[in-house]
Length: 260
Ligand code: COA
Image 1 (cartoon, rainbow, N blue to C red):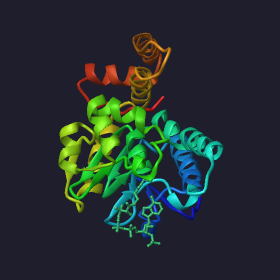
Image 2 (image 1 turned 180 degrees about the vertical axis):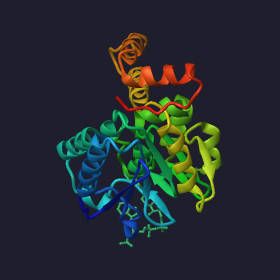
Image 3 (image 1 turned 135 degrees about the horizontal axis):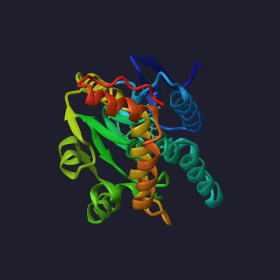
């Protein structure tokens, strides 16, 4: 499949999706959001794909936000529709994928860019990364889940401050806040993410999908995460991966998971 605004490649079970609008600092316009949806959907359905890495083209930005030029003249109704479309097609979609998604934050992750990184399952940043939700400086608020996911990740007080000041934090502060899990040099970012991805891909993909679902259940209204965990735990016992994992342990060999 070929795209206008993104690139998608699979190698050794790792799909790398790259947002490819470097001249606009990879800002998310509607077309890019639609293409990302498609690429994530294809990767998630591909049995050969064990992990997805999301990054931005160039050495300056992961994503510098939603494309401001697209919504500058929107009214209230169009604003709500924009947020709903984005959340459904991309941000909630990514968070709930059964394939693990790592954000390789290679520079600015602002507004919708940080929101997209936060929708990924975890984040690794290069040391030049700058992260923030500057929407209130434009007279709006984060609309792609930022007011919900930022406090989940860094706590309410810090999220309030970051959103109210419209400020940016650097990679070291993001690491201190727990917003990113690791910081590396820009040159090593992709290989660092690939190492993590290969470690993940050696484990049971069925169990990993169940773990993603159970962890996400903690953040869903009206759903008891502990009950979800019990269900998912039980489900694992009926899988070929479970038989292979436990048999391999008892036979003192490395498991070779069928992913079923
Ligand atoms: N939407 C649309 N275009 C954007 C964009 C965005 N969110 N962020 C950057 N761009 C475009 C710029 O308009 C510029 O385009 P041009 O060359 O056609 O004029 C190009 O990307 C380069 O950006 P520029 O501002 O010249 O780079 P800089 O190094 O001076 O500044 C930033 C970098 C990230 C500080 C600055 O681009 C910025 O503040 N961007 C907006 C961030 C934001 O508010 N995001 C939240 C949106 S809700």
